[in-house]
Amino acid sequence: MIYDPTTLNRQGNDAGTQYRSGIYISTPEQGGIARNMTQAKVFGRPIVTEVLSLSNYWPAEGYHQDFFERNPFQGYCMAVAAPKVEKFRKTFARLFKA
Image (cartoon, rainbow, N blue to C red; front, side, top):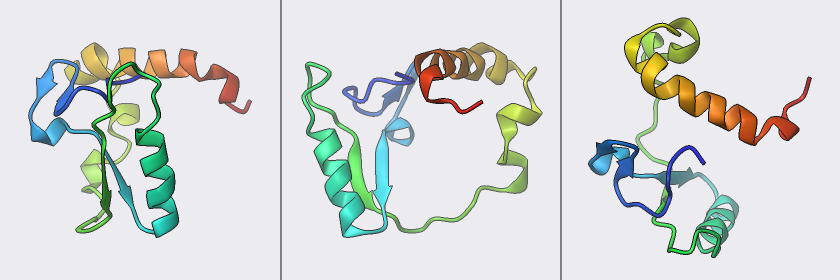
């Protein structure tokens, strides 16, 4: 798990509404799937991930695209992102295609 979906407005040491977890949907079918996932009893506590319609979406600026890949030695990438990426890769290694 990269973050705890049962903790409201928090990712690791970062706290605030900008760190809330969310699933943003564009079809009713996606909404049903997302709501079923967030109602699953897998963490021992309720999942607080919000499920909302996708709106006001636009791609991030170019300098944000592939940031981690392009800046592996940037402080935040080394201290925070790299350990999360490594944990993700180990956890889901069985799903990677060679």
